[in-house]
Length: 60
Image (cartoon, rainbow, N blue to C red; front, top):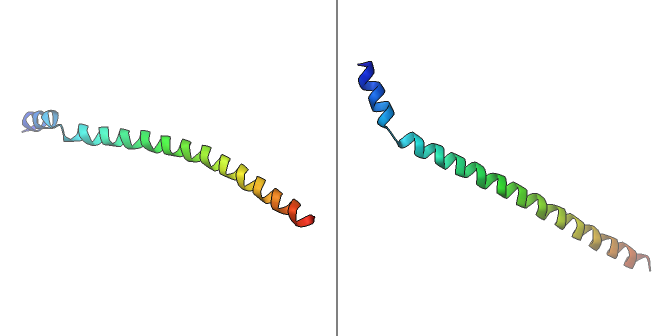
C-alpha cells in the first residue's frame, strides 16, 4: 500500500506546475512593487513641484 502511494506521489507532476506558477507570481509581484515605488517617487516630486509653483503664484 505505502510503496504504491509513494510511487504515485513521485510520478504526479501537477504540484511542480503549481510551484512554477507561484514562483512566477512572486517574481512578477516583486517587479511590480519595484516599478510602483519608482513611479510613486517621481509622482511625488512632480506634485510637490506643482504645489510649490501654485503657492508662489498665489503670493504674487
